[in-house]
Length: 296
Image (cartoon, rainbow, N blue to C red; front, top):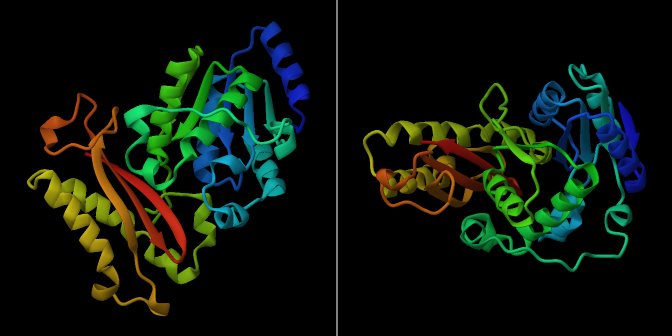
């Protein structure tokens, strides 16, 4: 593995790889790597000759400055994790660790992306400008790495739909590779934000996935609205049914059942297209915003 922090150096390495006919895979991350990230990197190493893993906390996708300040930054540990992975098919692996000034040398970007209905639901209204900020940094990474394939985790399900829409707009011949969620043994979706949970909150958090799994079973005999209401009520009242220390409680922000591709809410299970429906949830716990999904 080689660490590169300068865009020009990455461009030179990519050009050399392309001259050699190597297929390039890109894994964009914000660092604080966990097993979920590593599963993306390992898959990229299996499927490509040359892999770029970006470690960059992108400030323009954060709506909340406090959230940006608290986002974990563990670059040295991240580099050790990447270096510990067997490269498999990949002949070279580059960890790209740019500064903000390196990514945005002209200052804060002025370009703005719009994605229509796919960004007007769930995260979109609650985090204005977030997906445009994601698109800006992802396009810059696409331009630098020139990948054949790009790997994203399904926990950020709406983000995948946005990147798919971005590729439709910019017409880049890049294969978007969605990768399954990796969970802890107790079912909690792995996330860099999990490390901000107190021990008591971490013990409580798996109830999110357990509730979603029960919702998937309920979908066999309950309608969409009833499943949505049950999920929200179950989590909102969890602390009453199972008393928690320190006054901990779930604060559900939303739970939406949407078409798996268009991300538009459905009223009946039959309204979903051929790819089915997905339930997407955002929940606050211990001052940390957790997201997860369930496929119906």
